[in-house]
Length: 246
Image 1 (cartoon, rainbow, N blue to C red):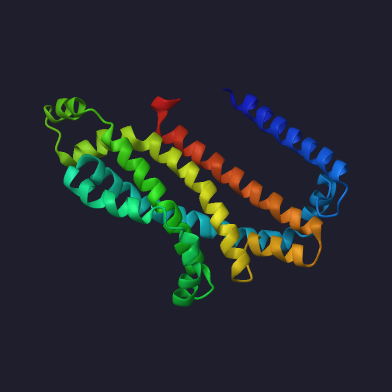
Image 2 (cartoon, rainbow, N blue to C red; image 1 turned 45 degrees about the vertical axis):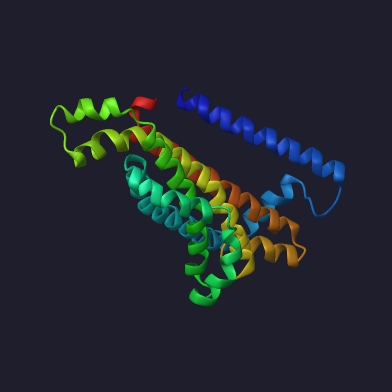
């Protein structure tokens, strides 16, 4: 799709959502669901403060996602191409994956305090397994014949991973990053509402406690915009790193 058409599609979707929001707010007629106009006014009124909270939220999400990718991708590639490693790793992953990592937030707060460390640790724990499992499954799907044909040309193990396995898995890794981004933002909101005095989650909850619903929805809009921009950046990375997928 041409770039101009994508912009028009995004603008159309935003206008449609705002229209549905306006109709719902008018129909409910409750201060707890203000019209989009009031939320946009709150966004303009609180923007300097919102920008500071946005910085902390973006930092926590991006660093947590980067650390998860840095550790989960190599481990997933290794497990996907090595049955012994996979047979050892898979039971631990399947046993730990259903455990609600958010329940460990009080433990993380006791160990690391109420700063960035505890929040980023919980986000990391939530998205690590998502990226690991997707990467492992993508590596397992690569046909052995393809690797043998490249190896017959003189490629070593390092070259196979760098030139065949990683490029073949890259689209699935980026897809896992998109899915994990939604989970990361959800966990970020929860962690910022429980502890600390910074971040968009804290700002939204503070607006609720002050019954300033315009400010509350301004924070929600900012968090939605943060997710949209990060999603677009991941799409840009896929466009640049996976030209064969265009």
